[in-house]
Length: 236
Image (cartoon, rainbow, N blue to C red; front, side, top):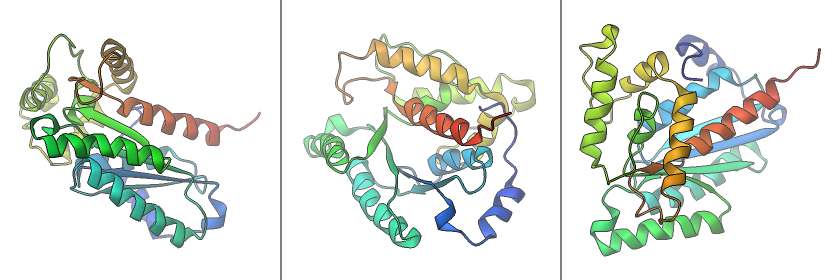
């Protein structure tokens, strides 16, 4: 959960330095993201909750748009499989709708991203318009009554964080991973999941490219939490 504590970067670095005993890991989990910084940083915060030598989590940023993310995921999956000398168990692609509906070629690439992901047996966590919608849901409800430009999402996110006395001087900078520290300290993952589920239910009659605002990032987060809980289980 977002309130479970602050990421211990020192411990993470210590774990990363150890030789990887691939045969010990029963589950290889790959997440390939559109964003090159914020999104992979966010998903790496889950590493501290994973029992050692259970789930190998790799989060990769690409800086590419939807179809490019899926194409890169195919390469990253092959790379990880070669390193581990075994198949990758689960691959998720994380991308945004952004302005895909405004240019026909981009619309086609967005739609193709879903098709290719399905063909490659990859799961999709998309956001319409942007991943930061998922972050905002940690702090407040979001209405599905009308589309929300991403500039408004960024502004609402900054306002929500600044409402905390400890962060009243916070300035949101798009692409900067500092937002993740604030999210971990102040946000509620449980409420974010509830709000994302509600939004998605309200948009269920629409295609992903039409469903502004909506996100399926919560499905990926729930999957990670379920796996972590399963591997953390210890009988009395």
